[in-house]
Length: 180
Image (cartoon, rainbow, N blue to C red):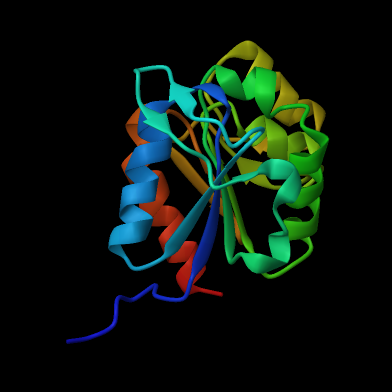
C-alpha cells in the first residue's frame, strides 16, 4: 500500500468564528485530508464555530496561537463572518505577511482574499474574490490585479471566487503544495 501523496503536509485552515461559509471550509478540508494532509483549524476562539448553513466545527487553536512556520499552507475560508472576524484580525494579517515571505502556499476564498490584500501580499499579483463592488475595490486599492475567474493561481498564492469554487479551490491548493 502506498502512502497518501500529501502525508506530512500541514495545512492551517482559518475560519470565522461565526458565519463562515460551510462549503468553503468543509469541502477543501475533506479534499486535503483525503490526500493525506493534516489540517489544523484556527479561529478567533476555540469554542465551536458556526457556519452560515448550520455546519459546526471546533477549532484546534486560536489564530493568535498559530505559528506559520509549522505549516506548509494557510487556507482562509470565506463567508459573511470573514468581514467581522478575519478582515481586520492583526494576528491573521501577520501570519499572512510571514507566509508570503516564506515557502508556504497562501490561499483564500470568497471575501477572504481581502485579508491577503490588506496584508500586502497581492500587490502586482492576479487574484480573484467574491464579485461585489467592495471586495473588488479592496483588492484593487491594495494593488492586486483583479480577475473575474473561479480560481486564480499566482505563484504560491491561490484565490477562489465563491462557494461553487470550493472543490476547484481545494484541488488548486494541493497542486500548489505539490510544487513546493
